[in-house]
Amino acid sequence: AGPSIKLNNGVEIPVLGLGTWQSPPEQVTNAVEYAIKEAGYRHIDCAWMYGNEKEVGEGIRRSGVPRSEIFITSKLWCTQHNQVEAALDDTLANLGTDYLDLYLIHWPIHLNPNGNHPKLPTLPDGSRDILRNWKLKDTWAQMEAVLKKGKVRAIGVSNFSERVLEQEILPYAEIVPAVDQLEIHLYNPQHKLLAYLRSKGIVPQAYSPLGSTGSPLLADETAAAVAAKHGLQPADVILGYLVAKDIVTLPKSVTPARIASNYAGALAAASKLTKEDVELLDGVAASGKQKRLIMPPWGVDLGFENWP
Ligand code: A2P
Image (cartoon, rainbow, N blue to C red):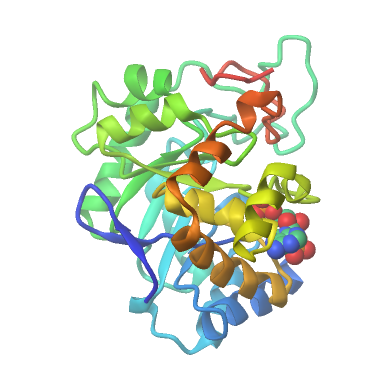
């Protein structure tokens, strides 16, 4: 097993995981099988909403590596906040496993199951599908219940700002979230939020670490310069920079060569980057490059900095 980080309940999470958002079902089985069998991954990041859990599960089985050696995360979709165990059971059936290593609340937003999400209409008040009277603490209590039942080894959140954690989760939580999975990368480093998470013992996870579709970060000049200095590729530096900061990093690819190079390259870069390199990369966003790339259509204020 590669390097891992200890969560606040003692569970070890591999620091690199394969992202599966926007991985087409017809390609993701091979991608997951390859990642585990050939490239060294032992951690797959999934979500019910991605619509490909069955195919991910098939890839995990085809890898031949025992379930107990693989860390599987999935996420509760926004229409399921009042029925966590049923939603989890659906995800477990999709993946073909009887437990998850980590289960996350995907977004701090409750959507009407009978509304027309995922293609939310652009209503003037933006509110038709959002159930504003549902309390997140009730969803969290249901997350704690499935943990206690042994159906998951750890629970956490995703896309939760400091404000949402402080006001809607931590005052009521019996169990502190193990992770907060966020859009974290060179152009959206969220330094303040990360410092807050560290102070609470919540491990940050980075999705879209390369900038998602089209991987726009790969053209960054600072990353290229740091990469050239160490004989690395820009992707290695962009991923290894996060790993060096003890952020669980989740690059997505369905391309075998990239799946392999992302894993090996990120670990190589994490060991080669100096303190000065990391400080330089930490400053890239503030030098005029700050850019959040993933913004959901419901457009409500989630309490994040730099949310246009
Ligand atoms: P693909 O899946 O077709 O290989 P992120 O991890 O930020 O979500 O980025 C994922 C995007 O970046 C996908 O479009 C993926 O394409 C592409 N990608 C992943 N790894 C690399 C890489 N090493 N070099 C170039 N593009 C990459």
